[in-house]
Length: 147
Length: 162
Length: 184
Image: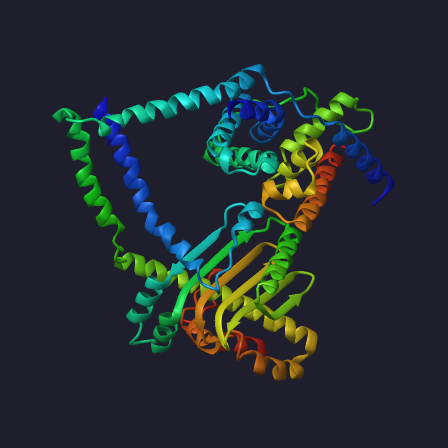
């Protein structure tokens, strides 16, 4: 780092020290202070909306939403059943697996190259032999390294 | 409950506002994001450790801002914060105010999580541990990334030098 | 007014219900010892350019469909619980990726994962870990960072690595568009 950079660093550090927290505007402060009253009001409204459930005889028109919910429930149960994958899903999965394994192969190839570089070809063969029992090197990557 | 909540509002609203402004820049969006975060605090206050209110709130504010950023249309124009009417020029000879504006604009231009890191650590003066809690990073990550953030700031500010 | 509110509620419920099985699949994988959470990566690098998560049922189906041509794949996939890949562009910030790989590596080691390969060179870093329980490989994690991209792979399930290597050959595709892959 040269002298100019050091000066710039010092300037930046001093400036960062002087950056201050900005005061929230009055409009925001007012909104935030209203939250307890507004949220409490919403909670009370929600409770009273469902309070008819605890009452005695209910007018028939008020039961309409409940009846509408029945087909929804049926659909929900149907959707929650494990969905059979379609042919398109299976093909997509197959392609995804191809991509996944190709990345694994790329890594294996790079790792093999690095071992080759560091240890030399002869030593590498004797190291990589046992290693390949545990690492998914492929025939392809092994071939490419020896050519 | 409301009394404690209002005390938190008084204590943390400025910090939440500053963070949201740096991330979103648009003041009305920043207000909305802050309100959303405090509403979540109201609904979850019983389950949060009182000693961890500040990092919790900063994390929720930040996540809310990042969600808004992701939903934004790329062509939308935003009001720049403290946008100086200054043509980029050499750092030396810049007045303190211009330098501060330039620095703020540069911080605004940092990618995440570097921008949040600088705001939380250098502007809010949070501890490394608190910054880690907000950003879900461990201590060594916080220090390493902060170092990188400062490096980016230095590089971008140095570009304006002759 | 009442009907439109009900309609909106129904739409919201349906959307949430449709999303449940997908979320449930990834959540289900978290239970396995061979699972590794790559969640923190998005915080640093943003959205991945490639994101793959294939669960148990699809693995089984792919395997059984190719059983006649590739019985080894069928056998391997029957025992796998999941295959996950996240690939990120490092945008020239490979240093950040390398530090993250080191942190993830320490975390894996402390959780009982065994390091089988470590490559540290100027232009790339590779880590390969295995979760071995009672002599059986229950997970493989591969992390590889080079100048332009960082690759994270997590294979979950009872794995015979030699079998995996043979199966990978048959699934090879050309991801770089160099036309140098073998035909199946």
